[in-house]
Image 1 (cartoon, one colour):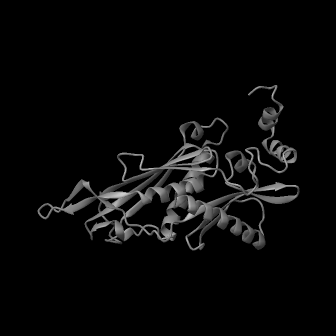
Image 2 (cartoon, rainbow, N blue to C red):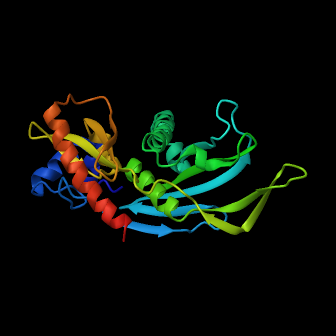
Image 3 (cartoon, rainbow, N blue to C red):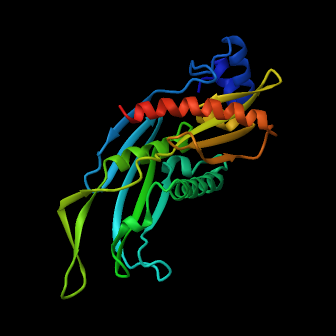
Length: 282
């Protein structure tokens, strides 16, 4: 960073004041040129990993996430002999996870929370039926491993991961598994692939809004960058199903919120998610 660059110096010293000054001088446009309710471009690449059952790479602006779906055969739980297992893991770039700004533990905690939220959404939306992961009752089931590798985090990681999951599921195929009648062990035929059956009628998608105080009012920033997330009073996540039914609402601590504000944010989230669905179906 050059000290001769006043804008970069102000941004380094006080990001919030830099952001407020930028809005004043640029007719309420965000630093990347977007309006408050405008999202970034979305880029999609599917089936890019050779050794996974399904995969995708998604870019929301500069935020880049790879979703990988793999499976392992295991014994079912005694509590549910027909149910398989699902595990979700979100991984950040090593350079960000080991930040020197004292945020390492906070980042780790945030991504453990995000991993759990993604798993909760899969369960609540019934996107994947655990009984569909059964090979033979009481003997063999699939343990589904869903990994989200963030190559670059420039904000809105929640939306990116959930969108990547839906793309990956659409291109997921499992190998055929048969049980050897003599040994009762599973035989996996990797060249005989079967499209994975999941609930296409749900496909939950997320809208993240950064709640920012500007001119003594709360402004809602759609698809926030990581800088906007850092200066926001609070972060609000809406997860909606195909019929616009709410699957999850999560708000971080911070700005108090009225019912009217929640309704306003729901309308913004619905319009944003409608755009994502169009992109999903292209």
